Length: 272
Ligand SMILES: [Zn+2]
Ligand SMILES: [Zn+2]
Image 1 (cartoon, rainbow, N blue to C red):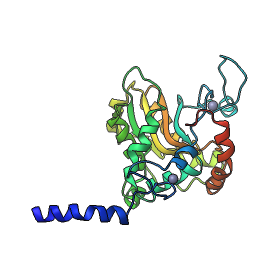
Image 2 (cartoon, rainbow, N blue to C red):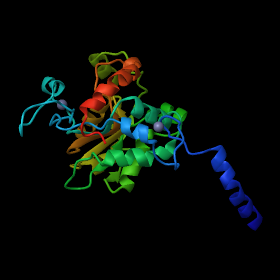
Image 3 (cartoon, rainbow, N blue to C red):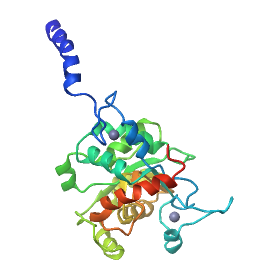
């Protein structure tokens, strides 16, 4: 055993030299294994304030003190009770999410969760933390639910109680990209339900619905409806990256993120 320990220690400097820590978003060398390089930190876009009182969408306004509501919320009042987004979807957040979800860099979960936690509103009672569910098949293919890992980290940060299987997907839903709002709603109708075993805990409780990326709103709407039907109180959506252009088909979102990042960053005085 002592031999193995000495051998391991002797190897460490070599391992560090061969595999220096890299920024999970852009791949450039960084000092420590956890975190981003300074450039990527700087290019993450934090939602600016003020924002819509219903969905926290950043808005430019000259109104002082008055409550503002964005056009999408005026058109169709949302079922949720607010959105807590760590960042706006853009080049840097997209790379981070890709590394996390598809590059299997699960060690990013604590970092992403800390950034989400910073945006969460205060609750009178600790809320239940419910991840957006993956269908069994996707879970089996990917091996983990990225939203559930974030929800677990949020619990570790003292932001609520994890209810990991509060919601379930009854059927695999087709990719929602390219579908109109109506078609998305039809595809999702009845697809997401509160688990019978979770209903008792949900009664009258505030819920933070957790996901990595918030896109069309159709999936989260179905989750919010299922939670409220099961007796939940307020339901706040929490995500790492919020896509603001909800009408955009999924295939074009990456392009949009790239194009809008710079003006978005310039408009966001809250970005730090
Ligand atoms: Zn970087
Ligand atoms: Zn709004």
